[in-house]
Image (tube, rainbow, N blue to C red; front, side, top):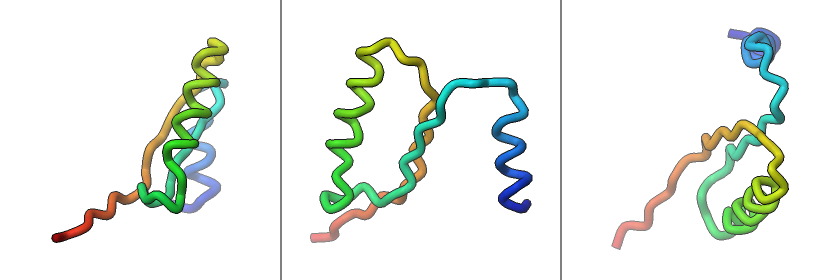
Length: 62
């Protein structure tokens, strides 16, 4: 599937809500805590949005 097709597929549902996407690793250097603080601020303003969490999880083995 091409990127253009994927983009069209996502918008074909008639849903005009903003889409927020996290596609980074869940590591401290990517600052996921700040990402969630911003989500909290947006939600507190009663701004509806769609959320996609797609980043890989990296686990430290001891």
